Image 1: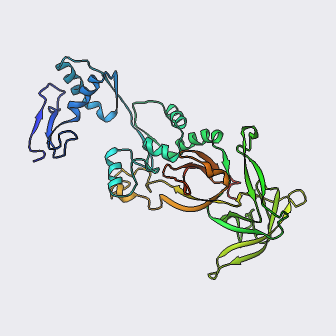
Image 2: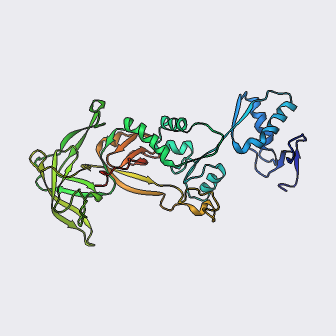
Image 3: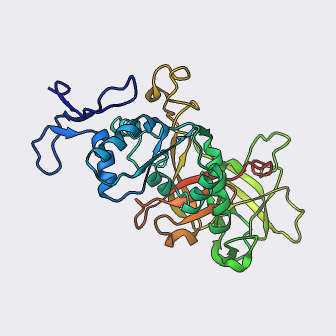
Length: 379
């Protein structure tokens, strides 16, 4: 039976330590021989594999410090090259788990998709979510290496991501929850093409074209039927500007479905040069491309899901049921040629990356990070 017998290494260790186990019984099929049940332990294989592979320094977190004596003893007993084991403090990220065993449990329980699920903090997950390698390197350089355990909020890493994407991710127009707008006095017989800069603060870096027609879509939250006094976007009495279009629109009629829900706004437009300056400009799309957008939040509700005092029911009981929300959205035509891992800023929304599961006719975008909190953003 498993655990019924072990083979130990007989060595002299510090007081209170027992001889480490070299081999144990484990009923798991061997990847080569198939039917096998005697396997070496970490203590036996770690130093030998490092020596065989000519590793100079074996870098471990602090919990492996107690294994250092057996690591050196076995290499010296066999008279083989002995690498240096060096320990450092573990970097813990709040609102997640980084233990491979616990991540495996999340996968088997169906809470996350796989090791590259964008809600995790594995390197493959961060890549799929759209975190640039240089942002991760910058974050690690800022944190430094220390012997003490460190806890850091995800916002610290996200700040490094924004710094990189701000200068590398082209801007596009997307509405997450579309609301149809029909311009009743549209001044052109056919849709017109508008040149939009990829980086508004640096137009020399390129541009792309989008279409403006009498039918377009704005963000549903950019219209309020009963606004409070601080609301600055579109209302029945308050016009709003359309970014890059050079026009201001004003509500003429509100169209509802049989349930009383607003499904369309009939508006009139006026050239920006002759209209009164609007209090706000909003993003919009015309002749849009349907896309799937995945919006991610923290995987756990508490800062330290592994802390029994904070989460008595265990980390699995702390999973956030709203950590993933999927919406069908509209984007401008410039994203049609986007490839897996391409990164964009959806103006006024956040940074997004093309998911590798995307295929022709079905683009999927993962939210990498939101934009910085800005008092103007919610107006």
